[in-house]
Image: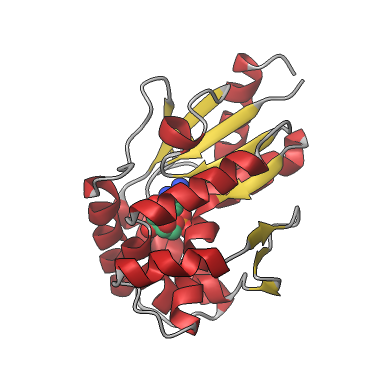
Length: 220
Ligand code: DC
């Protein structure tokens, strides 16, 4: 059967890692919507467009084509930008870009198209509330900001991305604030979402929990 799983939650709650593992386990296509907001940000940064300039960023959308491959890579106008979207510069500018109405409308439409007629697990901030309100399963992951900063710091260390724990903590606090206070599609759980606190769980434990929730809701 065709079914959709929405995973939402704040930055650094491990959504993308979990969604990607779930996709492999259950044979779903993983769509990482955060990567798409990041790709629009990278386009602006690479083309001397100020990410704080809403008009200029919105006008650039007509020149942007974003695709994702099943192995988790993100392409911007045919170029693999999987690494560029994770830099500190992209991370600190993406919250500006993701509040713009036109950017959201553009990406929501693309995300809905990508999820049409196939079984997907899509992760982001507004998947259960806006993008796929009819999703069969909605999971909202939470974890303390300190725990998320610790994870982000470790992840960056492993990838050789320079930053301190304090940088990660500040960046996450700032993004939490912007994401939950913005006018369009603020970060919040859907009324019918299941809240999953991952603070004290390992990645595999979270994947196990999500699989249980999905199997409970969907006949697979
Ligand atoms: O999940 P992430 O950290 O890669 O997301 C990057 C940014 O994109 C984050 O600051 C919020 C924004 N975002 C959003 O507004 N809506 C989504 N569906 C996904 C991400």
